[in-house]
Image 1 (cartoon, helix red, strand yellow):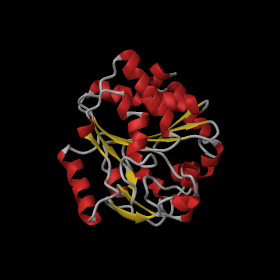
Image 2: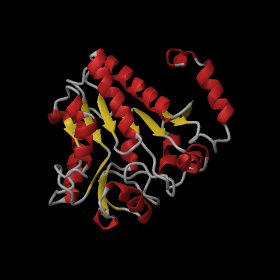
Image 3: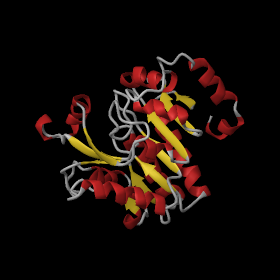
Length: 261
């Protein structure tokens, strides 16, 4: 893992968007894995601005989202499809036929999950996977004790995840109890992973994921096995990291980061 510390959440979002921009300009047909949530919204705002102001082209890009709620139709404002439309897809020149999100209304979830895996394979695999992290260390809806070799599947959500997502719904009772998610194994097959975490509430779990043991209790810790994984955090989310000074030194001294300093 390569940990990059930024001064605040805005700087972290801007850097994440810049890395995605660089990848997309280098490969216009980029296969991009996407995530939803409050941490992702400012990243997408920066990407939309880059499209608007600097002609960042999404026309050949193909996307796969990590997850979707079970039982919520795509046009429901609480669905992850609606989130992606509002925050990115409706704001750039992407062909929505090239945007893929698991179908939470599928009649056969096993077949839907197998189909999603086939679609990723047919596109040649995911080039760059964007990730957030839950307060219990989950990536996607891979809750604690998920297999580190798991594939796309239907998953029961933990009470912690349901409580965390309740703020997006009119009442806690309306939060779905199940989701479809890429598996940990699916995520690890991406050519590059980019995890973004901000805020003091993520500090403890970031430290566990980055510097703790690899364990299914913290599914994000499996990213330690990935050959090309970057973790972008703000000062608050980095505050529990033991190697914080080393991570700062890397960013300040490695030539790769010169254009971003």
